[in-house]
Each structure stands twice: as C-alpha cells, then as structure tokens.
Image (cartoon, rainbow, N blue to C red; front, side):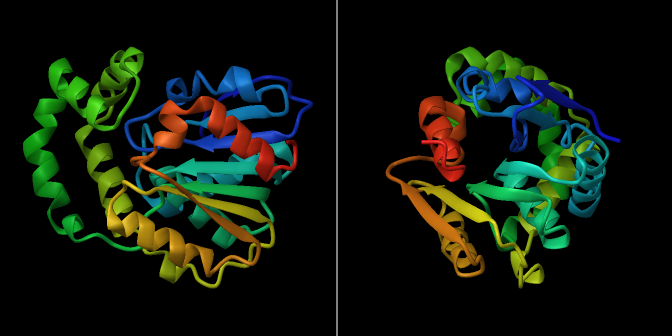
Length: 243
C-alpha cells in the first residue's frame, strides 16, 4: 500500500490532495495551515514510484478503503494528479463527495510519441540544480520552493519519469465517459494555459452532472495550487459549502 503524509485533526472530513509531476507534499505547505481548520489532509505518495494510471488509481482505492472506510469528503488533483483523480472516480464513483480538477488535460498530446527518447536525452540535465531551478521558475513556483523541487526531481528515476510523462500525455478521458459521479465538481484552469487544457476543461464540464467551470484570468498551469494558497483554500471551502 502506498504511504501518505497526513496533517491536521483526523476527526475532520478527509481532503486528499494529488500533486502534479515533480511535486510533493512540500508544494502544499502554505495551504495546509490555512485549510486544516476544516479538513484532515492526506497527500498520498503516488508519483515517486509511478508506473501506470491504472496502478496509481488502484493504489489510491486500496489506501482509501483500508484507512478511510472506502470514502473521503474531497479529492483535489493538479495536472496528472487530476488525471489520476478522474481515473479513480470513473471506477469508484462513490469514493468521494466532492471533486476538484485543476489544469487537467483530457486528451492525448502529440508529444507523447517522443517522450521516451526526449526523456532519455534530457534526464541527465535533471541532475543539475541550475537546470531544475530554471524548470521551477517556468512552473511559476515561489523561489523558496526551488530547493524542494530540485530535491524532488533528483529523486525520480529515469523510468519513473518516462512512465509519468507518458501517462500524462497519453491520457484520454473519453475512454472513461460516461462518468457516473454524482458529487459536486469544480473544474479549474488558467486562461494563460495551453489550449488543450482549456479545451479539456470545457469537455469535462459537459460530462459531469453537477459541475462548475472556473477560469482563472491570466493564471498559468497549476498556478492556483502553487502560488495562491488563500484562493485555493477559499475554493476548497466553497466546494464543500464551508464559506
């Protein structure tokens, strides 16, 4: 069974946070103090040894079944974390009450055809701190998190990185439709993201019974989670009718 980081009062409703690629629990350290008033926060370590989307979803299901009687209050995923969340609820639609999908690509991307050779060529660069700092800046991470990002990336094996990027760029939500999820869903994207994310968000909106789409003006990929902890907290509280 996968391990997880936990924060707050275990008697509170469970909020499961699924990070994006290259991120870990450290990416939520500004959010955790703000949100632990209302939630028991868990951050499963799905990505460090990632193999496939199906395996990741199954491990999450096993964790939630074993530790939380098969149901949690809220599931919130970023990027590949959102894809894993989608895959999970497509198989287990009653596993959570509420769902937040941020910067979720719902369609395959053409770059998937060259992921393996590109990763094989560029992996050596991820051994260098300066390269990782540039990547962190491109992700709009706060500068005080550059070191954590560097350590996270350096801990990832080449095969795990290939597995993660391949799963992310070949993910096809159309294979999961219809999704029999009756809970409340927020679909969030930044207006400065790639077109595929914006297109995906509107596609997903049409395939949930109780969904709201939230475009964030001038935000980039994952920026809500990564650089706006107060706004993220407010959105999670609103999703759960705590505002």
